Each structure stands twice: as structure tokens, then as C-alpha cells.
Length: 272
Image (cartoon, rainbow, N blue to C red; front, side, top):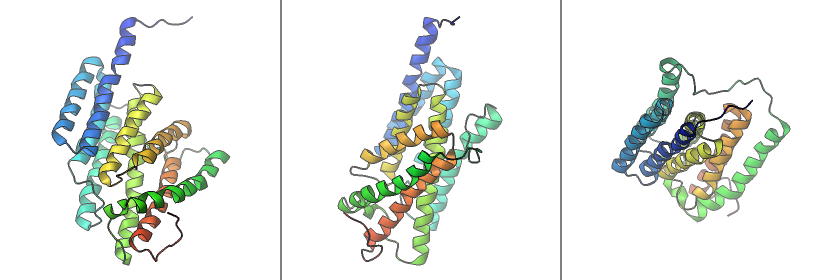
């Protein structure tokens, strides 16, 4: 016997999309447009709307909002100086750590999780996808970075210390992207919205953040689909370790391309 859903419940469920879209829009304004006043205004409006619709929605969007606010408060650049890496690294830790600890110890629903040791073996398709990621990165990133000269948004690393800092920075940021946009934002949005809606909204946040970081020109054409696919894979595998592996393989190619772009005689293996 099926349980009927009241019209009020259906309307309320559909209304949840409004504040969720406002939060995603706030991220776009904060990061892509770099308009802090409008971005925070949208964020406040989103939380007010959520408060009228559903208390749990308000809690979950607040956790995403805190992460967005924290990251928007620091310069989001590719600077690899010690000072900037400490400042941005601290913000990244707070943006991910706050939602996790509040969800687990204050709200006690443990909605935000970072599943690494899942006990599930990767399937053949998942294993084969990893070298495919390398091939796609090799095909896309050199053309994108060099032809558009977007590589100039990253510092030229030529000595051992700077190369290590660049490697550390690209990898740390790749891991953080998955922790915040997928494990936190997507997961919390998915509690209230259909997966496809939650996925699009997190992909907007994901792409907007990387735009401010330095991925300009036509980067959204491959970053947005990448973000969508990462969330879809996470839904299927429930494995943070897998999506991080995918991301870090892509970022490894990015790292090599950046070294080559700034020092053309180095790693001269790319076609563009």
C-alpha cells in the first residue's frame, strides 16, 4: 500500500531548491565575480529562505555557507609563498573541518563523512578509468594552459624548493576540492534535492572557485563536466579515496604542464 504525499509536503520539497540555488549563486558571485557584498547578501537571503522552509535545510546550507564565507575571506590565488600557503591552507582546513565537526558533534547526524577505507575493491571499470584520466589530461591541459597563456596565473617554479611548493599546492588543493565540494557541499545538498540538482549546484561552486584560483578562459568547459562526473562517481562508489585518486592524476599532469610551460626545455613531451 503506497503512502500518499500531501500537496503541502510536495510544495515544501520543491521550494527547497530556491535557497539551495541562492547558496550556489552566492558562491558564483563570491568566487567568479568576486563581489563580496552581493555574494554575502545572497547567502543571507538563502539562509533566511531556508529557515522558513525547513529547519534541517537551514542547518545544512549554513554549513556550506560557512565554508564559502571562510574561503571568500582570504586571497584565492596560486601564490606559493609560505605566508600565503599558511593563510589559504588554514582557511581550507576551517572550511572543511567546521562542517564536519558541527555535523558530527553538534547536530549529531554525521552527514559529512570522508570515506577512505571503504573495504570495497575498485572494479575493473574504475581501474581502467584512471589511465583514461591521464590521457584526457595530456590531451586537454597542454592545449588549454599554453595556447591561452593561462599558465601565467601560476608562478614559474625553477628551483627545487619552488617545484616542491608547486607540487604540494596543486595536490593539497585537489584533495580539498573533493573534501569540500563533493563530500561536504554535494552530500549536504543531496539530502534535500534530487541528485542531478545537487550535482549541478555543487559543480557551479566547484567551477567558480577554480575560476578565481586562475582557471580562466575556456576552463569551465572541462572543469564543470569534471565536477559533475566526480560527484556521480562518488555517489556510485561512496569512496573519497577513489575520487581523490582521479583528481590527483589529473593534477599531476597539470603540475608537469606548468613546469613545461614556464621552462619549455623541461618535460618537452606535450602537444599543443
